[in-house]
Amino acid sequence: MGALWSFIHGEIMDGGIRTQLREHWGLCPRHAWGHAFVDIELWEQGTATRAGHLPFDAEVLHEELLGDAVGAFTRPLSRRRLLRALARKGRCRVCVGLSGSHVDRIGYAGQSSGTLTRIVDQLGFTRELICASRGTWRLGMCPSCAWPGSTDAYALGSRPLLCRHHTSELLAADGLYTSTQERIASQLKAVLTRLRRHIETGSWADPNAQADPAAAWVEALGWTAGWDPVLAIAADCG
Image 1 (cartoon, helix red, strand yellow):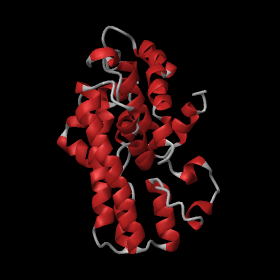
Image 2: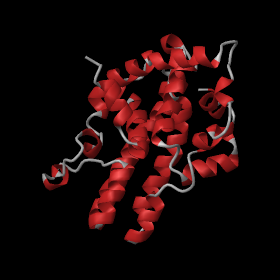
Image 3: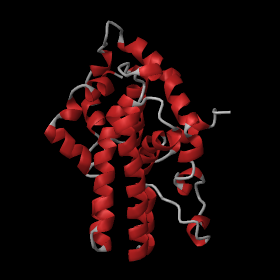
């Protein structure tokens, strides 16, 4: 917990670390979602009824990552070069920070790391955001994450947006037509446009923004880090 809170309030703004994050496509799946959850549950600066509790820090990072993804699928890259572009390079920054360290003992705002961990573990604000925007993000979720082992989505022509990992698997196995790469770029660009709108209006000026742009952060993290955590939370939406 301390490592993620330190990451949000310092390391993530360092230029060298930012470069590492872009080369690694953010953090590992566990810490990518954990980063967003900590941001949502503990960050209490905002306006109107939300009073913060939005993944602003994670959104800004994924704005950069989705921009890189759109560029990768837009450029005329060979299959090998595109695979290299989509591959993670280096290690997860938070995993590295935790190696042999006692950073998780650090507390913030007068509270111990254990207390902060218990607050985050409840996922109250996170569940609220995920459930409220479920009608939008589930239309853009990766079918291979949602239904492991299913191979029917492309055969049926439903044209889903596979996450980065499953896109790479498809690319390695069968390659991608130019038209498919253009479609993926267009889909990612649409998510990026909505994400930017939420960063500009939802996180600060209009914290009660409608679910359409608010769902973009879920789709952005789902594309870079996979959908397992959000699908587990959504199972309790009712």
